Length: 123
Image 1 (cartoon, rainbow, N blue to C red):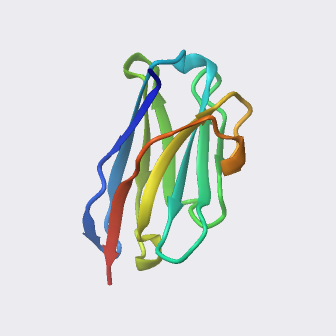
Image 2: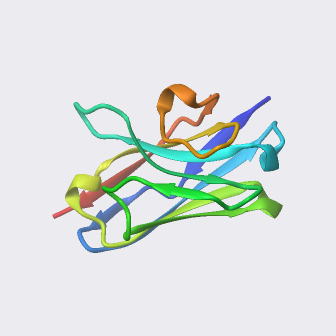
């Protein structure tokens, strides 16, 4: 059974940091790209970053470039999203999703989804 499980969401003050984790199981981790998406209340889901676990290729949306860093621990089948300099507008439910490479942040391209973890950034 394919599973993607996000963790690490929390309430944090503006300017703070959080690290989200996405633990994957049930598929060949090295064969997939893992992306992070977020959805704020009343807004569409936004693709923010993606990494291919085999090559390490990454992509960042402009909204998070320079503040967020995606990484992959292939031994643990886990992808991380380090989020620094958080802003209130980063408040959202964060999802990870998997698809075959290349990197993409198009939600329609993703094959598997986690259930999300809530990040709240207080001003």
